[in-house]
Image 1 (cartoon, helix red, strand yellow):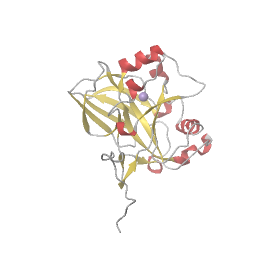
Image 2: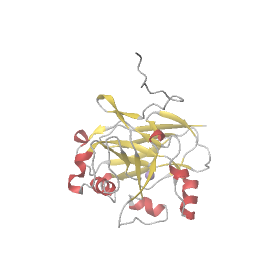
Image 3: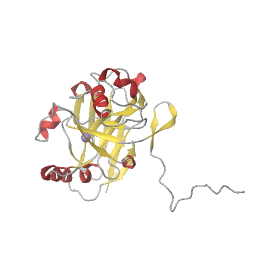
Image 4: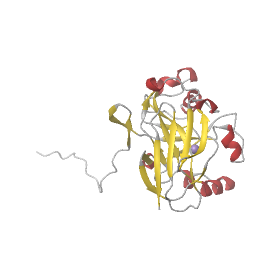
Length: 235
Ligand code: MN
């Protein structure tokens, strides 16, 4: 008798979203993507707002917004102000809920370089009207990421430089120690609201210097100790 319980789909399901791990042939399957807003004081200032010292805040992107480093992606629809945001990305490795900051790093698998690509005009319009940021943030190919480096190999988060160049010119440069909410604080705080799971990613916010890109631009983002994230914008 044949297997009558075999699952059949109306149309082919999307392949799992997964990203490379440095020095490991296996891929890391991506779960949810959380992004932190205003986590460098200089960037909050350039956006005309102040960092909220009471608690961090978040927006999300769908997992299928992931784009691997070295890709060439088209200028997205619906915007005339497409921006880069260079970010330090945390990959969760073990399930964790309501963890104190002192034990939060135990749940971290590793780190990566990332770009939170943003339709700034749509984000700011939504912000002004008190609407959700989805159109500005959670769109196709908006979460670019480099290979993940294991936490043990990266070591302690501290004075590492985070830098983005566009066509060779430095546009963003800061230190990871400039993060307003540290990685243990972010993991701890998020874990009070979600049951964080292996494969969840946290984009930890961008330093000052965000700006627009155009077709033909080449973005090169680096963080000491991590593989770079590179992106080309096509028409
Ligand atoms: Mn961001």
